[in-house]
Image (cartoon, rainbow, N blue to C red):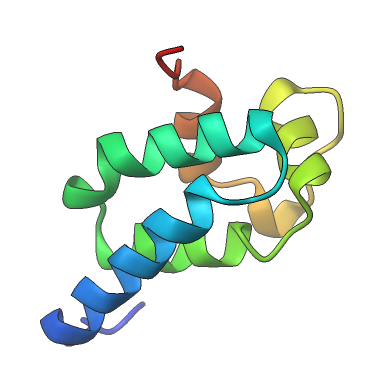
Length: 92
């Protein structure tokens, strides 16, 4: 089980994740990940934050392939959060 994270630390982590989600260097990933983070960050649990941080460590093209279903998802990233990302429809 993930231990609760200090709220001050969590605020910093959320800001960092918002930035990392929007500036990936791959436009499609920026739109999906950044849009998802902006729409969901305030309601994400501590566990979701940790899972999202781990996901963002992967390569952009891999993440995009997992979301679009063109690449098999490694077990470590096959999470409910990824399922929510797959269902997310960014506004264009």
